Amino acid sequence: MHFDYDHKATPEELVKARNHEAITTGTVEGFEQGRDIYAIEGDPYPEKRIVMRVKVEDSIKDRGLVKDGYVYVDLDQGGVYHDGTPRTSLEDFRKAIPSGTRVILFLFKEQRAAFRIDGEKNGLPEGARLAAADPQGIIFDTGNQLVGGQEDLDTQWKSINRIDVVAERVRNALKGN
Image (cartoon, rainbow, N blue to C red; front, side):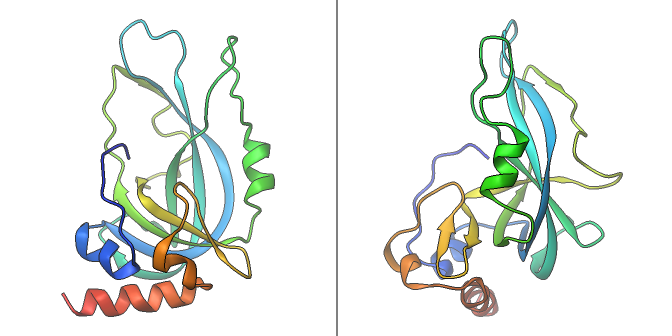
């Protein structure tokens, strides 16, 4: 999801500031080739996207993004070479984020508009909806620390070392609303 945002210093601030469609914990199961997005007419190279498939362990909040126990998260694949080949392959993602990696996700429904989108359902099973992550909304658990998937973690986030702690703080913040 592309938007300007104010960085939130804590999990509580994040959930109170934005109305996420889903907040889940789970494990990464894999990556599939996603859509090709042409932002403007005559664009010679598409923006390449991938889909991260996550098996949901705990659905803290869900308004229809969890399908059969999974969420499907749209991610930027990075730049492309002049021949249109992605600079970052699916295998590169699979090596960097191996199957079984725990993650907490703060998600919105993907609603990207563009001149043309090819392969809109790539990487999605029948009936599943594509999710877009909040800029601070992908946090991986490396076993001894949390790592931001799109933004570096700082401030009070760094003092948290387990996804289960983030999930509990989020759950308590949502009860307080």
